[in-house]
Length: 472
Ligand code: UDX
Image 1 (cartoon, helix red, strand yellow):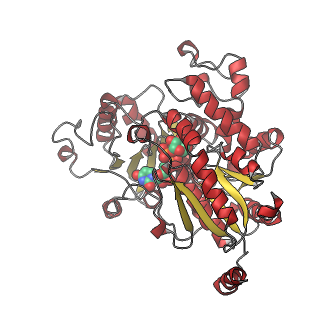
Image 2 (image 1 turned 180 degrees about the vertical axis):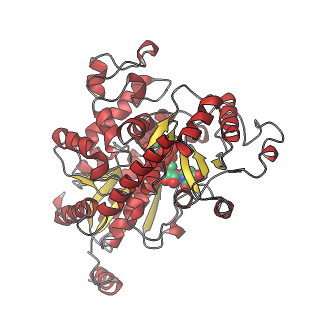
């Protein structure tokens, strides 16, 4: 009786429109995954759901940034060397194996806590594919969030076919060969990762695809006008509800920060002093790494372009270096203030700044979408996995950016920057990305596709049978 009162009080006083239902969210502990999951949490909280986040100790979010959510930490069992491993595939495999038991234990505890609002479902990162078996064993509905784009996911789903037809594993002699079944991709655009063990990567991809197919629905940080044809393909192959409700970060007016590194706010005052649309913002995300020679080509390409630039050099970006040691001494001084190098940026604010005219990016999905939403054209330098597909779509399908084609050479970098910032080609690209930005704005307005899709998601979750242990 006492427990029931607690719940009634919570629902009654907190807000009349609270749904009295709780969602358990489980993000993958990587920057490009935790950001969209916490944005989704904000969106669903604004729709009246209570939010519980289960997270690993490794790369844990800061609960004090999210006073409305409840956080539960689980031991991930990663050793120090495993957590800092440079092989992302190995990390994903380890996380899927080592989180299983602690995650299950935590979930069972949450489900049996009758003092809290009842749980409607689990929303898991799609790469945490082990969660399907756990949710099934507890008879808890499981919806997944796929944090990447739909177009790259469709390619992942085609891996068995690509292997059967000999496109995968990739052979160096075939890089320029068109993938007839998936235009406009060439073999070099296929979303592979240079893992020590390619079979391990195929295994992760199979887990991602198969356990998404077996879910009660999949949520996308994308919007219909951007990825319509991929959504149609997906709809044919995946007989589950599909919810493209992105761009997530544009739903909420105040953005809470889930950044692992401190965002350098001085970069905004530096941008304030630059001319409109003059600055190249260069940043390659949270995982990609470069060798020293590549780093120096980037530095000289930026310097020789004569454009102002804001460059994020994440500690660890250059293999074997702490930070900027490989730069020749006096490099920055020779630029007369035209270049500003920082460790981590408030990226969404940077892209929204009027001084920024181009984004040189690795095309992680979040960066790609954030650039589109601000109408900032891109220079594409994909490093691995889905970034290669995203880059191809940016440069050849949406035509809102230029891809660096022949590796990292300072002359090509300089020329590409000029094409984008100075020449007519750049103007056309700017016009096209402005249209995509406009469509991103429209899809979130009343009657827009993402707004409708969000309403469908809310209604889908509300119709799920509430979990009770009696149903076990
Ligand atoms: C990883 C993979 O590399 C990518 O292929 C996949 O699509 C998602 O997971 P990541 O390298 O972290 O992504 O890149 P991205 O998806 O672009 O996410 C980076 C996030 O960090 C963005 O939300 C961006 O706004 C933020 N960021 C980046 C900052 O806040 N500051 C920075 O300086 C750079």
